[in-house]
Length: 218
Ligand code: 3PG
Image (cartoon, rainbow, N blue to C red; front, side, top):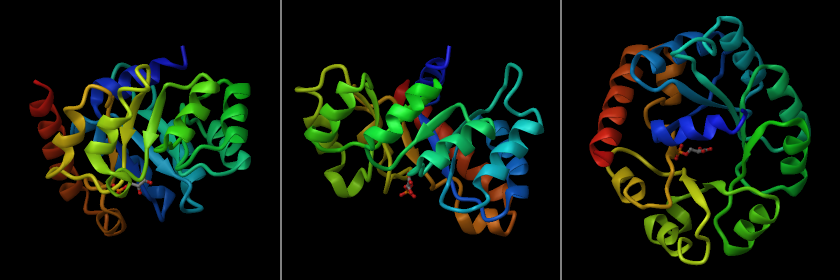
């Protein structure tokens, strides 16, 4: 079932948010993430390389088998992005904000959608559309862990993925909260490291991130 991807997100506890300048970097990058224990990726439509990057990952077979990479599209802000992401093999859609139009389109097309929401109004809008797993974005400037904690009382069914300004130093403040299903972040996939194809630094940063998340959750 499509919703199973959310279980994997929760199990992994971390969604790497990726900006690719060159689609050719997608396969070595996602192979590195998988080998480092993080078989998931949110490839953002912040660059024109996004659709080709998603396709390259799918065509390389990385999304199949027991160690399949969960492939998602991020920074999705238009209907065209949604269609392009689905066509390229994405299994989940992430938006920075809450657009009822985009959510409806994803639901019509049967793909999991995780919209951004931080205010009570935005959260209620998502709930009205049947969504309970939301991206809390931008996390650090929207009140951080205190704000995430504060939405737990009125919104018992909501689980969030705080993203924005998170790193190994502050991730525990978020991930230890019961209404946090996972966190998102780019700290283990620095754009400059991808550009210089420094996959060994990405491997170390990812291994460190995975170890930190396991230690918070143990
Ligand atoms: C996103 O789009 O989710 C953010 O750019 C990720 O935030 P970060 O770069 O601060 O981790």
